[in-house]
Length: 232
Image (tube, rainbow, N blue to C red; front, side, top):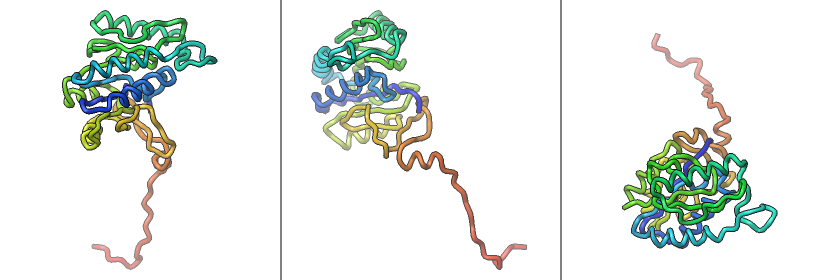
């Protein structure tokens, strides 16, 4: 299992408050340094304004600083990683994205950051940030949401939000990922579940029976009738 660029797809009939909570957790847990972190927030344009406003408000309230204190976001793994966040922000803003939350850095501590109206020509559309800097991509309908979700070399985790479970399952079935959650965050794991990805996110599965299977060689052993008939 390798990296990811997990899409969180928010359809036009989603519970917006629930989607906001899942997006914030999936994007900013462990400062976004998780292989299944929410890396692309894909939202239907019909509900985008309300969703973005609420998510930006929540992200702006997440405290960042010394992890020994009462903070949600502590230090990134290195100063180089933190500087990459600056580069992603600058690139997106220079090409038309709107900074709606965060954007500041102090050493290796980066605020929870959201950029709206991200497009495919921006680095953060394709690159795994592995940090708390996340793109919001607005789409016109369900079909475009699926297309954007699959427009990546990665395929580890994903999530779909909709009040219509059958609709969400149909969308999830078309998302190219090893894992997809309905009405929950992209960050989720249990030891008995088959964890792994497709495309550039690797191959194989670990966890539970799937892990045993990966380390098992199948063999065929027979007990035959010594008096069986042969053609010659």
